[in-house]
Length: 259
Image (tube, rainbow, N blue to C red; front, side):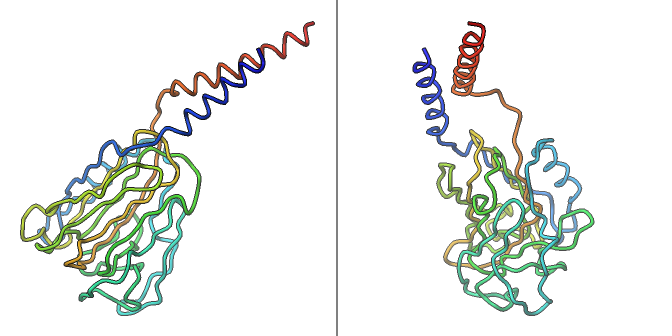
């Protein structure tokens, strides 16, 4: 009996660990722009809070990092409380690039259509007109979550580019080309604001989310208020099998003591 229960427990653990998560849904919701004068930051914050729910396991608002000066700075990759934020290579360059030109930077003022979205804060992460930014949760923690959300500023405001989101790590997913999220073939308005939400089929800890433009353009964008959370979901079947196995072992131990 003991060996059978041990085998059931081992099989349950194997079943849970072998199950690969998939990207269930991705949504990009527009909340106006500074360029058109209809920015709805309060609405974006409320929508993000509703999506994240009450079980937030971590997040980054970039307020604890040292921001670069207006024109130049010594930038690097940034490791936050929820994820590491890595640049995706040198871009062709543009008016928003500050040195060094192969890095993302922390800004503490609104520039080039990018801005802070944290209530009471001032800072955000700017792609600095480079290829893009990677959100890498596995570099920081092994806490489990099943959804990620963040605010995206000033993306796809140049008509010839394609904005891409690629999900990897423990999540099976392809590169998603997000055509004209600005709402027009010529590009969206300057200073646009989007809420990006990603929902996974299972809880994960090691996920990469790459945000980048196509090879033709290196137009900059910003991100802020990255949040990871987990929904209240029923224990999967393998989990119930594992609990049953442990319960059986406990019952055997009690019978031995009674004997």
